[in-house]
Amino acid sequence: MDLKGRSFLKLLDFTPEEIIYLVDLAQELKEKRKKGIRGNSLKDKNIALIFEKPSTRTRCSFTIGAQEEGALATYLAGSELQLGEKESIEDTARVLGRMFDGIEYRGYGQEIVETLAEYAGVPVWNGLTTEAHPTQFIADALTIRENFGDVRGLTVVFMGDAKNNVANSLMVGCAKLGMNYVACCPDADAPDSELVEKCRTIAAENNCTVTVTSDVEEGTKGAHVIYTDIWVSMGEPASLWEQRIKELSPYQVNAKVMANAADDAIFMHCLPAFHDTKTTVAQEIEEKFGLTEMEVTDEVFEGPQSRVFDEAENRMHSIKAVVLATLR
Image (tube, rainbow, N blue to C red):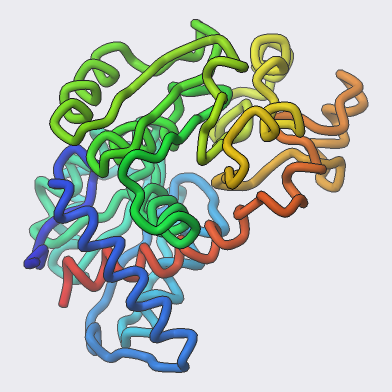
C-alpha cells in the first residue's frame, strides 16, 4: 500500500483497505516498540506541529512518534502563527511547505486544514478540527481489534453529543470497516443528516448499518463497544454546561448501560474525562450543579471493561503509522 505524499484530513478520503493498512501498521509499530525496536525511516525529516487548541495525547503522540523514527518535530502555537490574521492560511502553508516535510494541524474549521493541504505541497495531517478527528479513529480501531479480533459485524455505540468531531470520525470509520454504528443521543445532538446518509451508503457497501436513536436501552442493547466523550467540547463556551447537563444526563455511561451491552463489551473514551472531581473544571461543575460524575461514572471508567488507557496509548502508535505511511 503506497500512501506516500498523501495528506490525512478525513476518513472519507480513504478506502477501507487503506484504513486497515494504517491500523495494521500501527499494530506492527506497537509490537516493535514493546521489543525496544526503534526505526530510522524518517531520518533528517522535519515536521511542523500547529496547535491552535491545546492537547496532551495528540501533541505527545506526534512528537514521540516523529522522534522515534528519526524526525525532528517543531511545535508552533496558533498564537505565534496567527493563521488567517496577519498572514493568510494559503501563504502560511506555502512558507511552511518549503521548510518542513510534513505539517500537523489541530484547531478549528475543517476548511483550514484542507486549505493547508491544498497549498503546502507536503503531507498535512489533521490532529483535530471542529468537524473531524481521523487519527483518533485509527487508534480506536486498533483498540477494538485488540479486544475482539475481526471488527466486522461488531456494534459500536456513541453516547451523548453525537455530532462532535470524534463521533463523526467514528461513524465514518465504522461504516468503512464493517462495524454497525449507533449514535445514541437526544435529537438536538444528533449527527449531521447529510453525513449520516453518506455513511449509510458506505455502510451498505460493507454489510453494516448506521443508526441514530434517542432510546438508551434500545441503542445499547447487545453492543460490543460503548463510547463517549465530554459533554462540552474544547473551544465551546462554558455557558453550555447547564444546557448539555440537562440534555445529556440520561446518556451517561453507567453500570446499567454496560449491563445492557454484550457480556464482553468494552468502554472507550477519547479523554479527557469527567468521571470524578479531581480537576478544577469538575470541581466547579460539582459546586454549581451538584454533579461528581458526568458523561461516565467512575465505576465504569475505572472498571474491568474500561480500555481508555489502552486507547490513549494507541494514539501514539496510530499517529506514528499515519506519519510513516505518508512520509517515508
